[in-house]
Image (cartoon, rainbow, N blue to C red):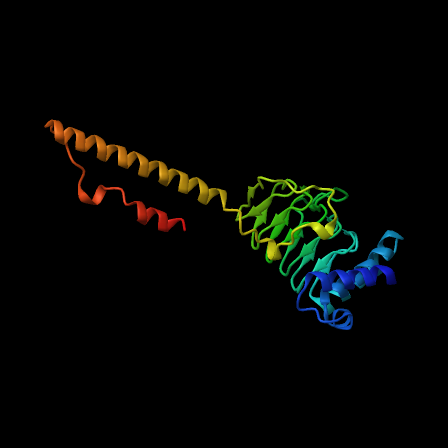
Length: 250
């Protein structure tokens, strides 16, 4: 237990620039306290002491504001940052080196007992603040879920899910799933600056296409005028305003 505790403390110091010392992390980080209490609760749960496991989980929730069901599986070096309002359901599985921020729910959408109802997080997954991951599917290794996203379907490895309902953004260059955790690029709150929302990219493409068509129409109109061919002109209010539409999707 103590080697795992030292590993967790070192991991938090590595990921959180606000952590000044091991003593501060040990005494002042509710995410660490919740993980330690969960290990005790799960030990009881897996040995048939169901009520005691639930009671320890309940006490952990009161003390930390983080609710982890004793049936959930939590990997090594999992960092619950701030943590208030985090809920992790009974059949959820959280892989090694994951980071979970405040207000996250790993919830189930089925009422069937004895079935897998909650999500599985692969290794190195980052779940941003307020995100809801709901259902029995997998979020792949090194994937990211942006803050306040609502995810109902599988997220591929190294992808980012954003929005409500979540849309999947794939990286052009995939990260080696077997790379050492220390070499992976860490993105706080699941923010990936170099990736744009796919809906915004699609709208921008449509606007650029409309702008190109508008330019072609101007050229054709000018040619008709030069040839002396009469044609009906659009009213001023119906003309395409490129800058106005671009501002709408910025």
